[in-house]
Amino acid sequence: MPETELINLRNLGKTSVQWLRAIGIHDAAELRRRGPVAAYSAVRARGFRASRTLLFAIAGALQDIHWSKLDPDYKQQLLQQLDEYDRRE
Image 1: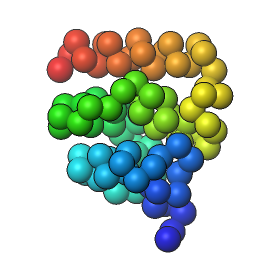
Image 2: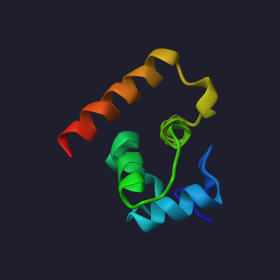
Image 3: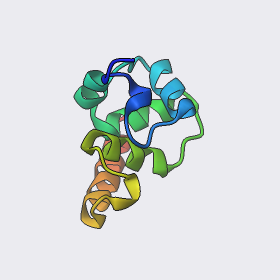
């Protein structure tokens, strides 16, 4: 599998990858383009019962670090962006 395959990214398992593919994200470049907040919001909008851990998992995947190692300030920023994003939708 090429390195651009979602399943090869840290934090993303089979279910997460299936959800991302269901919303049209098939590789790391597309995930990077959409960003963690938009990708997570699209997964939720599609009806999948993803917790906020998926938001952090996507962000960690894009930085190649485990989601639990994300800076707490960055996690808070993501949650704030998510709140703003949800209010626009």
